Length: 336
Image (cartoon, rainbow, N blue to C red; front, side, top):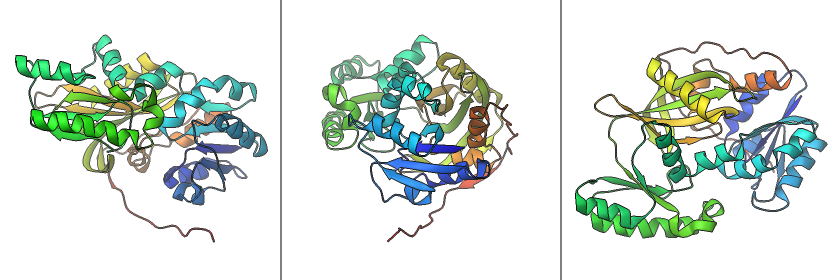
């Protein structure tokens, strides 16, 4: 059995996880728009592909699947999820398990304005979110909203264009500055149709931050939620975290899984305020940067995905509560 990881980028650790989980003779194939990345170097074979917004992208991915006898495809990047999801029927027709959720799930997960609307409609706590500067200023003047506030991309991931502001002057400046940054970055792929509303503004909630790995089967049924407390962050990703045993977080994971019926892993950020109330901050319908901490503690979602693709019942080992992981930097020698 061979697995294809799309938009593999720097996630060489996920390449290794899938390699370790595959039966003898199985290979991990990688696809990426840039050839010289750690994920491409670590894979058994790498293919440089067109950008995800190219008309040639999906045909090329399907061609690679055919060339390499791939039966399981896993996306590792928010930006190619919508394109793959829309083409899911083509993969199914070719006998390929595509670990990508339905288009509406991708849309709600990628769009922070729609995330707020959806969660609010389900009575799930989430920070108040605005997609118009005028609405924020009106509430500030009315005294129904106060600083500090968070400015971030409506569509995006990582730490690009995220600013904490404490004054109206900074609010107005970074709102416009963030839009200019987005126009000049890869995030413009998702934002180009509504670049005027490519920024959202959220109330700031101080407190503990947690990450959830919410794992569903290939039919969208919930299997397991693993929670971790984030101890340190770097460039928008978790740098140190501890696995926690918290029934509230596990129940929240189960609730979100029942609403989304997503496929595979969903990475969710959660805040706990000083009153002990939980707020869902944002989510990614894929493996996130926090999954390695779950894996270190004993989880093995790649093995579970492979088992399900082979028609077997996945084994979901218990994780080690209290396990703290710290990310490190390692170097790979690039091919000549």
